[in-house]
Length: 279
Image (cartoon, rainbow, N blue to C red):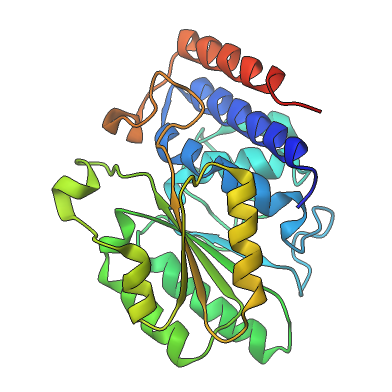
């Protein structure tokens, strides 16, 4: 990972562009997009083996964002990294766009897997990891899951498969922001100890107390890479809507209207956050 404060500033810029593009559209999945921004900032700040000038290079690390409705945050990250012009973000979910509301590998440079049907990204990631190993690549497959999403049985089928096939180059993240579309996760379908569940499926599991802290995220990834016997999962305790205090931790932020006044308010708050980051 690059300099910590540089990564923090990168996260602020991702949040700003995410909010602007959703605001341009007027509605979107802002809460779950903002909660994974710090993870994206770490992954795209030297953690992943990628090349924006060659998005399809064979031996690249690959990222499957199974909670595909968080696409706007991924698009903002890719644009800031130079995968496509940043002006393209204004076309989010517009007619004929290459930036649909959910991730689409056939439309967007830098997207490695089409996602949105919750749970299916987990199986796709395991297939990708298997294929890359067969090709002799020593790359990582990263997977981002939502906490509500892991109520899907397919996620646990994929977890069994990953352990059975010893997919040691898989690192999964659970965006544990405690909210899903219908209710708080605890009240709708309590998940218990997520890390222990994955451990029982043969995974190396870690809990990150502050899943929006780039240093804690980077340290957990380093721990995952230091072991080479099992697939890894990192449970990130995040805040839905992180970075825009008005919507932080709210159920309504899952998919909500975002008007110009909200965009201005959020950008002003993020500018202040950027000023508070040291050199």
